[in-house]
Image (cartoon, rainbow, N blue to C red; front, side, top):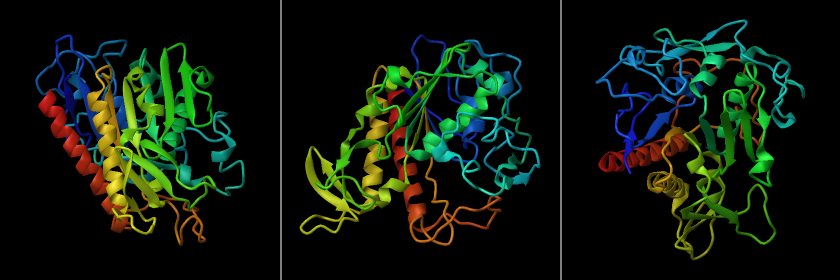
Length: 361
């Protein structure tokens, strides 16, 4: 099974083949421009044209050929700044009825909307997101977000963006008993499926303590066993976005081959402390290996990199708040300490998967 790898920030275009075999593609993406970048990469098919710009790509499978896309050889969408636009919001809690109460900040008292009025502007012209074009590009395809609440929220955001063109039908109940954490939406006109799979550790997990789940109880992670809630169904999807992060700060007991090998931040006697970064590394390694080894999975995989906590002046349970109304300016915040270590860990595992994918191509 061939597995082709590309990075969003490298300026490389996923190589394409005129053979009948379908290649897997793994893409590294940061938070800022993931949804902007997906339309540029997600459903591109056709013959290999050397090293074309996006304008030169011949696009098939229902994708309009005349869409003007960013030329990645001349435009790095990751370099730029946030600019204020008074009317920038693509949607609000009023215009998108699909926002659930748990995430409806404005409905439950957020006093301002300034945080909605910012656009990301790279050092070149980036086309605004166009829901109609996206759905045309995604016609007959499927996209899944796998991981924690970051992916779930991105799915919900994309859902609101696309619902302005076509209101989807929720079909979660056809696939899962748990329709709170496992969602599927179907856009029947465009035959496009959008889904989210709740798997904050990516691998199999359970509560280790008999009293059940709490905010600080130890959880058991089976680091060599991908969570079947997503792994067993991933072959149904053309593209997958993976994310995981903040849950790895909690106490975790690590298992491999069903045997305890250590723990992270759990302070249990006679158990080796392997740090939270070890568990994070092995969880991503298991997820990438699963995607590489599933022969029926022919899709493109996006890694959505680590997201620092958004609370300021304290943690979520020690007085921290998220009342910010504007993005951080360049140099105003730094990725450092444990956040940086998490980021570097997952990127190292991405690189390893990249090398393996190239060997198999």
